[in-house]
Length: 136
Image (cartoon, rainbow, N blue to C red; front, side, top):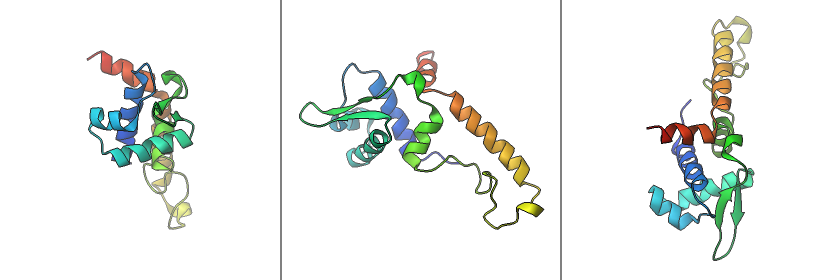
């Protein structure tokens, strides 16, 4: 599993928005976070479409969190921007892409690994990321 730039930028954006007292516009965030504006806009729109952000149009528009940072999990953020479930390997969901489940000795281990990764990603919240960063 690789976290793409989209996942990284989504996390940075959510952290940034959570620290502000008002909605944030794409132009300002793009400059502050040094993220290409068009790419950031696409990421934020995806997060808004999936209900992770509120989107406000107009001159004073922008984006704000739709819920408390404690309610966001790393897994849901990644799944939103990647548009697929986080997967360690193609077959870690219990389905072999080559239809060889019956003879595969690795699949049971990969499924267990996937379950551990899923549980770990579910256990990390946006709030915990922010709190851990503040302890440095």
